[in-house]
Image (cartoon, rainbow, N blue to C red; front, side, top):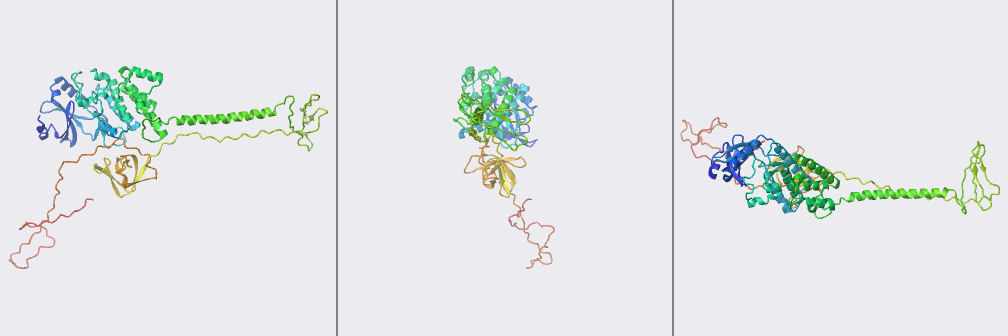
Length: 568
């Protein structure tokens, strides 16, 4: 079918509107479904591949199998047909979004990797889609960022990522030359796939790991992880490739990416399901890390502050140990002072004597041992406690007993506690009615409004200090963009920790559709016709104030501007 004919004729029930791109295997068009009144995407197999009956047959079979699949992260196949030129085509539901490669280009310009939790959740959605496809024995032969779409505006659910081109079969000839524009995406394919071997679930794991590496580091993997790299990391503690690029992630995340990118497919995660389990562990670790240290942008080339908490704990234990040791030393000193003295010492002993029926409450006796005489004080256990002393005791010269000085009570050291996760910042709408837009700017389309006084949760901002916009969530869970000039922070420091948005929709191109000419209402003023009794008089009969019918005009009508009645 000629290109001009595509835009003039219907392709089954589809009206071709625009050629989007020429991909490696297909030509992609935007079309309109006249039967179901919706926009669709149509992939028509390119002539050089349509001539290969084997390739075209596998193309059709895979598309028909996908037509039975319903998954929020897989582009829905609506129809499989044949164009007038003989090449098969596939109609898919249109996705309001842009490719992951476009987003990676934005990040490269900012020299900033994405938030680790965002990256892990994105890859988890792709893993969910591939796990279902693998059950149907459908493997993606070109799993790379060009074939991953990100929706522009989504509710906070796990359906913001859409996998496309899953119906494309494997290459006709494993050793076929790869076009230059596709070479840059070869780094996302597994070593065995680039060598012309069959694609397996381990190949999917490698591609997912490569995209995760790019998201977290801003760089493509330099090479697969060899056995030598793994041995050196185990023996000498050498950092992984991702750890050398970015040092603020958890060990679980480093281990996830390192194993997914191993050169030997047998040493990767055996299935996508096992990969997802490890990914969930890394996601939990990253959420705990960010919850402990607070929301902050990722850092490069600087050691993280993860040693602060262990240092505080060690300091606490040292302080407690020092206090305990000091108390033990003071106790030993007190016991030594109160113990029986040796020869040559002159200790003093206080004895409290209670005698029944006497007014004596207590008496002090001093015993001073010498070489000739030894005094003994014996407490006799009987009905009346008495004090017995040896004859010839020297006069009472009581030496005051040294009382132990009280030990200084150590200041209690507060146990370090992890700071609680900060509340989501909120802003209040300051105008009566404010528009919500699909992107950070007036060039983006409208999709709703909010009213004055509404409180909106702020997820992120666009990073433009001259024209700041906030990505917000309304009370009814709508997500959109709002200008910073029409809202006010709930508290003075509420917006200090707001991060730059991980996803910015592309600026829409100006539409070439001509603006429709407004319909002008015409009000006709009609000159009245004189009746038979007054022909040509100077005072013709005037029409009634409320005529029931308007006669046909006899002269050129006078146009007046239409009245405008606002719609409710």
